[in-house]
Amino acid sequence: MPREEQNMVGYIVALITEFAKRYNLQQRQAYAYLKRFKGMKHLLDHFGVLHTQSFPDTVDVLAQVCANNGGGLK
Image 1 (cartoon, one colour):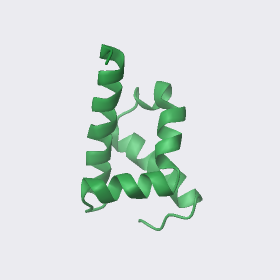
Image 2 (spheres, one colour):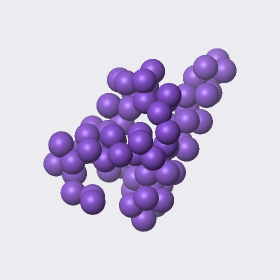
Image 3 (cartoon, one colour):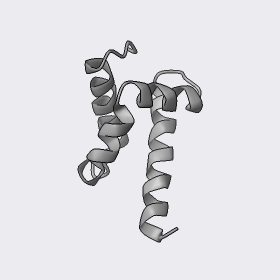
Image 4 (cartoon, helix red, strand yellow):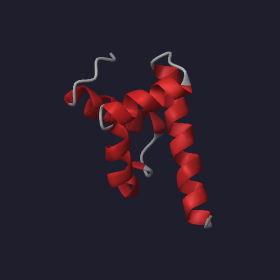
């Protein structure tokens, strides 16, 4: 796997971990939630911009995207 892809995967894993911590979820639950409510799609579609923001800001964005798509975490 090219280094750029390794960096992207590492960032996404770290971000899912931060999302899980904020909402008191296990990492698997956080990933499933993000996937179900289109947070992962948003992250992948806008990775170029999102990875330049802080983790708290990006978690906020993903939480809002999920809420806009029916997610209920608050």
